[in-house]
Structure formats: C-alpha cells, structure tokens
Length: 415
Image (tube, rainbow, N blue to C red; front, side):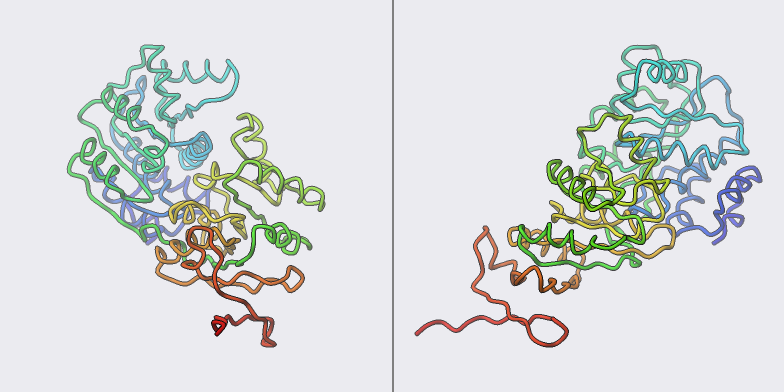
C-alpha cells in the first residue's frame, strides 16, 4: 500500500515525500488506519519493520487535523534508551518538517545546559516529548509539569523497558495522564508481563502482530563452530581484507569489546567501541561517525542491539552467542534494513553450543555452519547435547576432500 492511500494530510505527505517514503511496510499498513481512528493499539513487531513511522505518522496527522491547544504537552513517547529516544526525535523532526509541531527529547547525560533545555521545554509546553522513563520521572519530581492535556501516550519497545526495570516509573507517569487519551504500545515480544501492562493502561486495544520475533528473511544467517581460542583467529581471517560495508561486532563483555576494537585498530580498520563505560557525549560521537562512514566497524555490547537505525549495515557478527533468542533477534536485526540484504554470522564455542541450539529451536530452522579455515586447525563437532555442562563430546572431526567440508563420526568403543 502507498502512503498516499491512507488519507494522510497533505503536509504530512510532503514530509514523507521529502524523506522518500512511498510504500508502507506491513506493520504500517495494519496499524496506521487503527491509530488514525483513535483506537488504543498493541503492536508486536520485530526490529526493523518500520514501527516508529507506524505510530509517528498517524499521531502527527491527528495533531494536524484535529484542534489542539498550543501551550500544553500533547504527546509523550517513551523509549528505553537515550539512543532510541534520539532516533525517534530525529524521525519525528523529518516527518513533521512541513508541520508546525515541536518535539523535545528527554534523556540522561549531558551538562547543565541540556537539563535546563529539557526543563524549559517541559514547562513551556512543547508539543511532543520523547523520553526515557527515569529522566522524565526526575523532571516530574522536581518541577510542576502539566501532563493533564496529553492526548497520545506511546510506549516503544515496551518489553525492553520492563526488562530494564522501568515498570514502576511507567505507572507513575500514567497516573499523571488524563484517563481520556489514546495509548499505543509496541513490543518486540509479548511475555505475560507485557500482556498485564497492556490490560492495565490500554482501553479495549486492537492487537496487531507482525512476524513475531522472527528475523528478517533478507538476513542470511550462518555460524562458525569453533573453540574460544579460535575466535580471534577468525576475526583476523574475516577482516584480513577491506570490508565493503559497515559491520557491527557484538559481544556481551565490555572487556572483549575493548580487546576486539584494539585488535582491529592495529589492523588499520576505522573501528570504534561502544559500551557502557563511555560518556553520553562519547557515545553520540561514535554513532554519528558510524552513520557518516568515518567508522566502518562498530564493536559493541548489547547497548546498541536495539534502537540503532542505520540502513547500510551489511554484516552483524556475534563474537559470542547471545544469552537468549530474543537478544539474537535484536542483534541481527541491525542488518537488512530498508529492503536491503544482510549477513549475520555467529561464533559458537563449545560451552555456547547449548545456547545456540536453543536459538535454532526458537527459529525452527538449522543455521548453516561454515567450515573453519584450515589454518585455524580442527573445529569442535556441533553436538549441543554432548557439550552440556561444559563436558567435551565423544566425537571427532575429520576433513574430507569435498571442498573442505567436514563429516563427523563417532569412534567405535574399544573392546
């Protein structure tokens, strides 16, 4: 479906045209008409499906076409991280370029001038607030902020906010909002705690589910079965020649992120590390440099697994296996965005085989195992049950002459 078939206001369509948005994604096609009708909605959609535009556009359209009061806050969008709040703010500014609607991002970090700017916007009545729960609560506790005229309350990545412990903060904010409002919730997953939150704050919501927790089909998934010691050798093999597109390397450990970034810098790559030890200003500079191609390889913890909205990331590499399938989905969802194709590769050590097998079961598919380069030696056999509890399997590997592929056999017991 085309955006100009949705009955959007001409000024909103102008913004879409300027940003080269023409065709809706499935989540946009299903949710925008519902939100335009003023109904509450809970949408379950994976990362990279266009859900940000799915709620910005209809809310913006309603603000344009329906009578609004100038001096009050009219919409609040909640996001789990500063990075996501900033990206939502940027998208809102783009869509509203031809519309007299003001936005303000509220998040932690920055100096006193940032705080003062946020305070002034809240007190003067900016049209749309995009905020992380903790920072908004801090402002509400310190100043008299009028939220009684808020007509639209949106929660983006609600599951992530609850995982980060923001449930109480969200409910404290809800209590300051008028009962007569439109509430919109988007979540990548739908665990019981999200269902309970929806029952508490939404009024007879329409439910929309789009490819729940499944990776984009445009992502080619593969894995190397290796030892922990072989992982750095694989990095050197894979990045031994220039990388054609932007890449993200994910690790769950800050120390590994720092080591990998150091190794790649010595290999003359334009690389930067992203982890929680960085100050907010440092994080923002890294993300800007990555977006502007000054950095081609970003090594990161899961702090950027959600929310980063850069379209030309060609490969995601999991240096270690994520703790659960949901983290895997969000990591690899950084590639193959905006109708592009992408590659996701995971390094799987012996102790991680059980976790990786659970991911395969969750996806209901076997992920292709790339043969290990001969220079790195023999690879462990992929046999998750045998590696249970860290025990080595009773398997051996043998290389045949068929293009370097391996066949595995169980040795006979000694008589």
